[in-house]
Length: 463
Image (cartoon, rainbow, N blue to C red; front, side, top):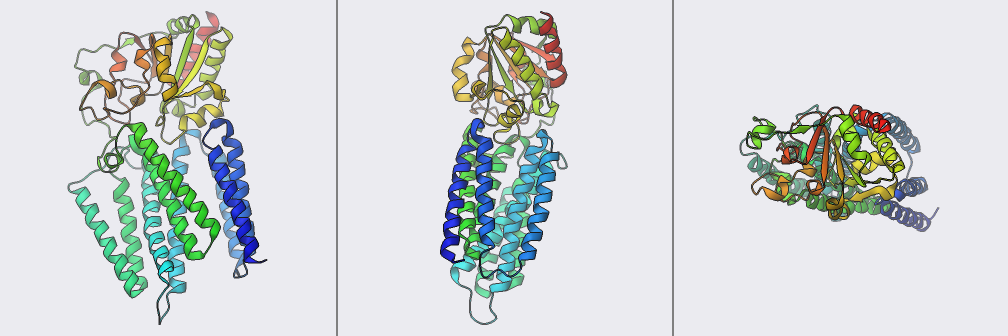
């Protein structure tokens, strides 16, 4: 088959990828967007077999077979709470693959006499460095999310200075590799990039994991695009560029959602738990949280006109998405206006709460983003916060100097009544205490989210 037809097929695949990514931006179209993007990728892979230069078809088929088995089994077995870990792990695999391809191409192309083409050399070096950073950084992110590593920031003296020196060392190794075309320097360059990826993510705490995952995803996309230039593969160039661009934009949007500049996220060691002090003490020592029984809360919900549920990571941990849907359905049967408020950084990955509620078939028109729902809270009778903490913390508005000050939040404290379902008064990912828990209009229901919602469903049926 001529290269022209292959490039036309790659163009069609790229268009499908763009359409798929676009449709992933809304829960209602995300499922079809996923299928459209998958068809585009299948076209790209299929027409790659038509390239005349290929001579090891069995190696490609073996890789596809292994990847298919691992991908399908993992995707079907993974729990919803572990989706962020899977995303981080798969992202790291992509970055590592790009780095290994760069190393293999360097070994194949580096001549014994003469020099590599500059475009090939730039692509190889870029892919080797960025892919290696993404690989090890993603593994560290996976370890923190999986709690193999501590979720808090891990810092040591002069950490940023050491990272800067390591970065300067990588620049020197890039120059040595480019001028000598010696494989030893490339190997050292990749080892140094792995170390930088490790040290880069280590000081970032759990509160910033959504931002870090987005950024590492952008790194992997850019590394894949550079690999496409090395391999002269149009589909890889376009696909990698799309992933890199979308990951970069998402990182910026997530940073805005956290209310802090990207620089502070990456170098501020934010997101760890406090070393000492309890929640009440942090509020001044005289704060008192009111509690309520499921029967009391069910009575409050039954006679409300509007109820807004605010899901958080605690909902995902308890796998209680179906229970919150059941409670919402019961309220709607009573004529209550039920809505779900989604904060952009709730959970541990972008869109985590959207995915969780979509699994429970919550109607898409009942999901409201932060900008849409905030003006509605003063007219809301009851807000039910299920496992969320930092994203509803009013200290972000009222306490200058607080680590989360300036972070956009869901204004649940402006509703008429607030119910917080939580195991304890412990702080969230940001490690700061929440004055909402001690607000006179707030009642606490201390329990596992699933157990609490099941009790509320039973109590509501009895009202």
